[in-house]
Amino acid sequence: MSHATGRAMKSVTLKAGLLAATLWITSQPGWAQTPPPEVRPLRPEMEKFIDQMVQAHGFDAKALRQVFAKVQTSQGVTRAIAAPSTSKPWYEFKPLFVDSLRISGGVKYWNDNAEVLERARKEFGVPESIIVAVIGIETRYGKRTGNFRVIDALSTLTFDAPARADYFRKELEQFLLLAREQQWDPLSINGSFAGAMGMPQFMPTSYRRYAIDFNADGHTDLWNDSADIIGSIGSYLHQSGWKEATPIVAPARVDTADWKALVDLGLKPTLTLEQWKMRGVDTLANVQVSLPASLFTLDLSGGPEFWFGFENFYAILQYNRSRNYAMAVNDLANEIVRERERISASVSSNGAQ
Ligand SMILES: [Ca+2]
Image 1 (tube, rainbow, N blue to C red):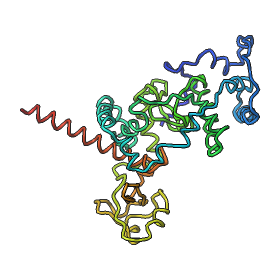
Image 2 (cartoon, rainbow, N blue to C red):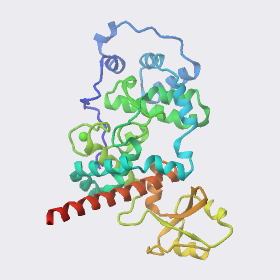
Image 3 (cartoon, protein in one colour):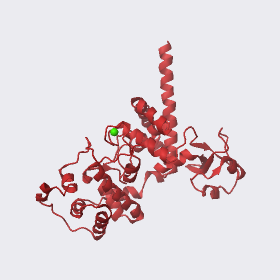
Image 4 (tube, rainbow, N blue to C red):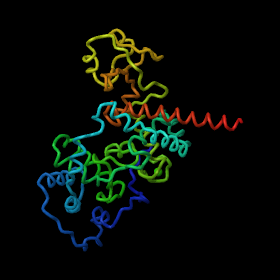
């Protein structure tokens, strides 16, 4: 698998601008004469972070201080992180993400990219419908890749929102490394309120680890290059434990009052269906009893609905750790398959007349 490092590339759409050149190629004598921009005093925690980037990764301290002088704290980011849509109950979440526009958009996206989707399925074992559904849920097939400056979002979540500061500090570090590798101006990259980028909404760590140049054109572009977008999602799910031709979920039948303790075992599939049966939980679905599964609930308006999640469900959870999210990917993928079959059946019956 060819991980893109992108050192030698120059992205067509995300050109390294004058600023980036000033920032990263400081050793070139010509740039020494560029007068430094006004640098406001930075907050001590930012100065500390910059010191660490200099020590650990050899960044130029002055250049980084110039970048962070332009970073803006975003109240929109703090508001958005406090109320993520994934925290809604399933009955409110599902209609927001499994809707008719995403279904018809998914059929179109599949048809437009059928060849590369098939190649990704053959290479990574991940069905076309799942890759399409991830793109649909993440960004409505590229319509919403996020309007926050990634460095503002990650800096706000690192320095102004203590809840998950350690996680976002690592992502900020990875983002600066990624920008250096890809020759991006770090101030020019937009993403979600959490700093997720491109059509598949990869966080910086994931971008560096899983993004691939799937059409071997020398660029790894998750905003505009459909092959890279599709291949990178396939690669991500494959490396997260996706098992070809095994199920994602199955409805569970719970015959025990103490189901809470069973759900608390967590989302990692640890018990086989056979072992679940001994604990009073089984399924009517036609699946192998040797498959490991987790037991989870979805919140319906009338109470919990029980499901088994298999290893593929857990792989989707590595993409986004929300049951709602992973279930929406599963449901949207199924709807897209159905709609595509319906259209093709009606086309062929019309053709037969
Ligand atoms: Ca490419």
